[in-house]
Image (cartoon, rainbow, N blue to C red; front, side, top):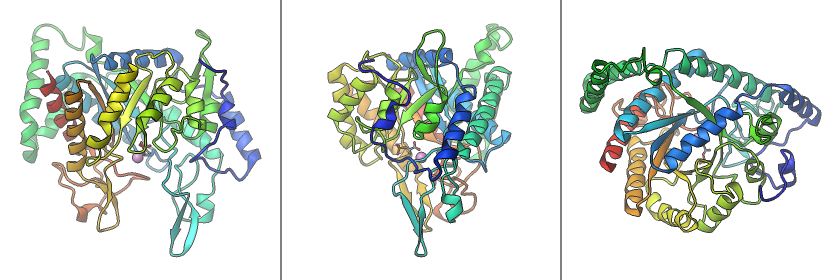
Length: 448
Ligand code: PEP
Ligand code: CO
């Protein structure tokens, strides 16, 4: 690392989007407890993920990253975790077929609790309170007590993350993720009448699996058909939490963020001289950097030098989140900046965060058409630039929510109130998420 680093060093840098904890003693007690707790991930897994992302960098694999905008204490259950995991697996099988290469699977899960907000306070009926910043900090309810930051929430988020990652490991390795089972779920989806347009692609996957079976390649003798490698990720926003879970890997002596496999820096917290960049530069984990319209090519170059001075492939994933109408204006200049530096990065498309609109009913929503439109633009721009569109990043859930409009499930503005459960941004529901995977698979097939 170019300059000395320690895990508390970020405290001397300007910080944004972090709470003012009203009680310093309670904060220290919570930090001390986290410090004594086991990390959630092991350095070996983190290196393995970095290696796989290096493959994405070289165009030999594809990245799928998805999950909640914000995990919540209220939605927490084994069923919720299972349903999100199941849809991600289904998406991954469809994408594997489309990309003709392996798909690196990362959940926005087991730590995705802290949220940046566009305003520090929220006003309702003349009453102004601190904004909700995610369940790891305060509560969504609009009362003074609920909106006050409570450090013990970090411990609750930690326990929930630990139990979540435990279940995900069991599902990944214990037989639940068998490719045949996953594909059967997808066939159930495509057999529903209105979704016949994806049947052909699903049938081709069936043929491919049948062929493998006939050739003697099945889950009983090929373990990769029965098990998956699944990784966790979240925005490294709440630095007290990140610092308290940072550990030194006893094998390599390197620092690892023990809170999740990949951590990313948000679009609002990526100031090159800010606290978030300072913390992230010192840990060995793969890092995401969200890139929205406000990042300049020069700023991106500075970030790449700070965060990846050795230009390791797999260290950096740039998550482009411009919005359908802006991606063509901003992305090419960033791609050029990366090429000028010869920087090795994974390019992923987050078609969610630049496409949020307010429906007439007042709900925050995203139109499936805009999401898809941004993905298509992203692919077209990379095709024109001769670079590899390496992945997609989406906010989704395995539940049948009504938060984004459009898609085969035909959620309309009028239906948004039916099952609008998100604690923060609108998510794709299970059929919209799978539909997105089919459409991305078609784009990927066109690349070959
Ligand atoms: C997010 O991914 O939930 C998020 C807040 O994204 P961004 O930083 O890109 O706005
Ligand atoms: Co979000």
